[in-house]
Amino acid sequence: MPAEIFLIVPDDVDPASFPDALQAVLTGTTCPALLLQRGGLSENAYKSLAKAIIPVAQQAGTAVLVEGEPGLVRLLGADGLHVSGGAAAVREAVEVLKPDLIVGAAGIGSRHDAMTKGELEVDYVFFGSPGGTQAEDREIAAWWAQTMEVPAVLCEPGAEPEAVDPLGCEFIALGRNIWDNAAGPGQALSAAARRLESL
Image (spheres, rainbow, N blue to C red):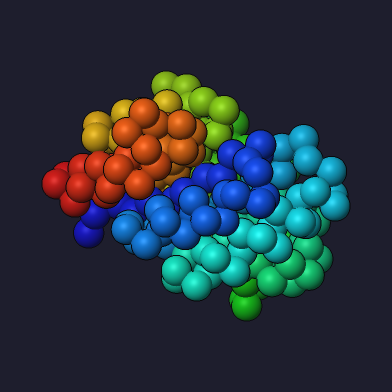
């Protein structure tokens, strides 16, 4: 089964215009999951952005993951929480949100870290960073995908859409390489989807 696209929303989008851009992109290509980054946004700004984006994504059949406290997920009507903190933060999220909602573990620094968080009944383990992924992240992601059952997400925000390689992971996370692409986000996402289908 081909890897699926895990779409990342940049943390500096315009909440007034971005929902229309997102709707256009999701109309053409299926994305099972979308990460709404918090970045440097204030709590109120993040909530406003989330309230503008979540209904658009969900209507397209895309689950929306937010960042922050577990209680924010239900408050915003999101589908789950993307946790970049340590094992304690992941454990808290699992206790509060599972089994009804999604919990993903990010901020992976080593194989041991991945195993520690992956054992906490998370729905996915996220390797790399929206700001850039290193060779070590890819190596750990490939190892995880080959040996563990918990789904892996490999973040590749710098890869050319037509040349993405999930390295055996169930999902590949794409961000600015889609939104800032010269061909346009819709064309870029379609190119990535075709590439994944061909592997």
